[in-house]
Length: 127
Image 1 (spheres, rainbow, N blue to C red):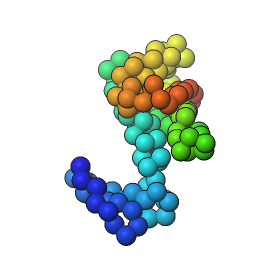
Image 2 (image 1 turned 90 degrees about the vertical axis):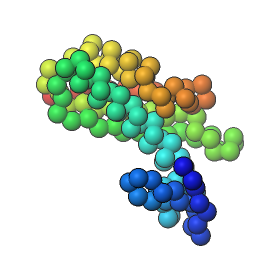
Image 3 (image 1 turned 180 degrees about the vertical axis):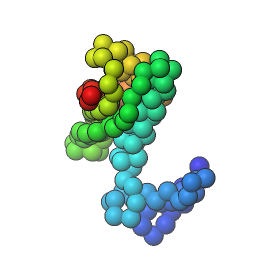
Image 4 (image 1 turned 45 degrees about the horizontal axis):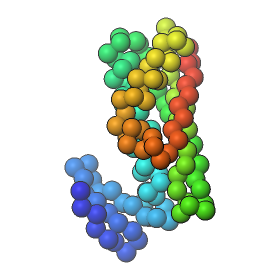
C-alpha cells in the first residue's frame, strides 16, 4: 500500500477507492480512528464468522468503541473498549461469553496490539 503526501494529509489508493488520512481529521480519517476501526471491525468479522459457524442465528450486530489515550506519552492509545450489541432471540449469555473468548483469540488486529493496548470487550444481547 502506497501512502502519498497530499496538501491536507496523505492518501492511499485501494481497490475500493481513495483512502484519505489527515492527522487533524478535517480532510480524512485520523490515524487513531483507522486503528480503532481496524480492531473493532476485525473483531466483528470474526464474531460473525463464529456465530455463523456455530449456527447461532442473529439479526444484527453493532460495535461501540471507546478509546482512551495518554497525552503524556505522545497521546498514544492505552485502552480500547469494544461493546458488542447482538440482536438474537436464542443466544444465551453463556454462548456469548464463549463467542467473545474465541473472537479475542482469533482477531489478528487484537492479537497484534494486545501487548501495548488494553483491549476490553463487553457484550449485550437484545431479544
